Length: 127
Length: 406
Image (tube, rainbow over all chains, first blue to last red; front, side):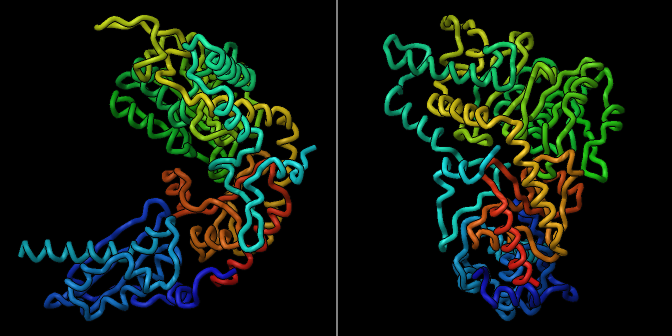
């Protein structure tokens, strides 16, 4: 059974950046209603750069590993860079072919992160 | 006796291989595979008889009409309906249930009325009633399930009252496999003057249905879950009710006479079959019904029971597997489970890598999963072509899966 790569399984079993951060500047929660995956992302953004990140939630190996990898990548990146991330960038991080049925799992972390940034921008406008 | 090895030969798709392994298909509650008899019936229709029905004054149209109406007659006998005109062809179970909600429901359900469904309904037997209740100011009530995952009939009795207009209930849960006591449920509803709709999508392939014995008013099921083509559903409705029901869709085929500003409608069933029907697939559906009838429900159930018991006993040996199943004597051939620490999507993906098809997710039953406190589940569902080797391969693959994710 050649299922997922060692890297994916490792991120799934030992996720990076899982938990909470102190005083996040923004967060977002998303759900994948088809499979019930839940994800919340907390970001600390200073001068338009992500300085801290954490995620929480439950889901399949693909969604958890993709989010774990993504959160590693996010640290030190600007909002602009993060908003430019495309599905292909996530597939490259995962390093495996993603079947149509698993696309939502793979991209849940990205869409939640970009939503958190939107929330950040909206809150900044109000200030 | 059913010999799955022999039956497998009728299903070309089961020869499909991946890495030298043949397909093990265990997602029958979602849709079944099709025997060559059904596939050939479709080809044969298009190659030899294709024409529109109920109108052509030429040979092939008359033949097509006879085949289409023949399928209706076979369906009538299959569920022992009193009359052929009580059988309406739709696209699927969902459309059949919506037809009732939009016509009978629209006309008969009023403000303050109550509709009873159960906790184990597929969305297709929940959302039409949610919609109707909201529109009419009626109320939805739910038959709860007990800890053993069977319906709580005592609680159901308490829900029934003079306000109950309709009881809409599944014959079998597509997740738990729980078989509902539909005759008892119907009888109790009738004592309160309520109408009864049975969602037979999960039962029609597995048990003999006798609508006169059940005494229900409506019964809906799908061809594709019982060896037939997709795109064909059946609605049975009692003739006396059907006669008073307004049309569902308006247009060709469903009329008796048309003026520019008015129309008279045809009698049932034509009144409810507007537009050109899915003729070829209805014709092929007859071949599916014949296939099941030839096997006999007696033998089908014997085979399913034996395989179910075997699967349960093999799966129970794996420590990390938690079965979500009712007591065996109240279960149909559906086995839902979870594995500690492994998301059902990953279970399904692991099995897929071994060319084994199962279902993972919420199976169109979000409220039930919420009630059970489960994010998602994995489901094995059996049918006539499945055998012990299919179960053995699945159990092996599950063990490997647990090893990978441990």
